[in-house]
Length: 146
Image (cartoon, rainbow, N blue to C red; front, side, top):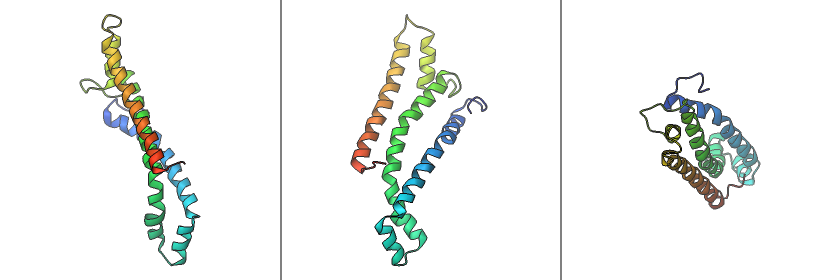
């Protein structure tokens, strides 16, 4: 998709969003289907609660832990995709700073100035690893075992 659009930050965000939204749609749909059969939802239906009430007060709050966990885990992947696109010249364009473009620029000066490539690469590694650790911790804390 980025090959068809102009290489800008906005188009990069649009491309990632178009690529990622079906996963979240499927996740919410499957959780909502399983929650619909739970006892508290059936009890709300029996006492005459409206469909809107059941959706926003009973089902949606139980979808939030899984959505938050998936979002946190996906932050690392989005950083990798954005950095990869910038490294290839399809993402953020200079003079806007980006870790992927820093790695690409530093690669021109290897092996004499190795730090120009290594440190932005380490920053990407630490950011992705950090978001994965946060996502795992949130999964355990929120009990999102889906």
